[in-house]
Length: 115
Length: 155
Image (cartoon, rainbow over all chains, first blue to last red):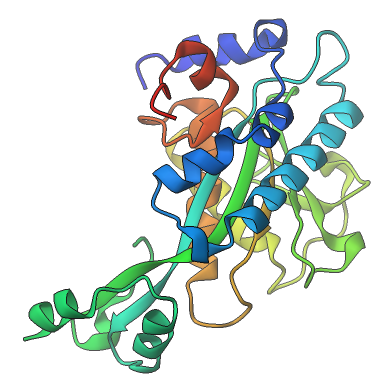
């Protein structure tokens, strides 16, 4: 928190960050970032990219509505991916079946952990 | 793994991330005190997808089209935005000078499937707030600044 004030000042000057996240999302860098984060061909990356683009477009509308773009283009924006989770071992063994069905689970590792 | 109640399994619980979750795009709010949050989830009616939350008044919330200061309608119990409001309120308690953030969320998690949608949403709120306020090291996946500063060269 030592540089909290510094960051507030940084964002107060929107002219310092006129880049458009929307354009960056659409040029393939987001897909590569998601692949780098561990998502594969079976994980519907294209659908997620479309969600990001739709979210960025919506945010741009919000920026226009609120005046963020009034002077020098959209303020600095960022994209985040937050995965859901399943309980592999708990009071709900049903989740184990879900996890296996999602093909993102290394059964051998879990067997070792549970044993 | 935030929010996990390990007592569900007598103190033992093994969790795994899944390839479904929340797509979040965030940017600093111009007025510093009012957050505008939008969901793209198709399960939420179109007129109910945007809320405004005021950080200066205990993180009160209002429906789209009203200003927090004159809002008279509180969001109903069980409304999706309550998770956002509670997370913001808690962060505001710890960081009184919190700057507001506007963000939009998309989600490909199945509804009510036990895949921790609520926990993921709370984590998403934190990441958005953290991005604007630098509460800790950034987990930014893609950002204008990171590209400009070359932190994501491997991408």
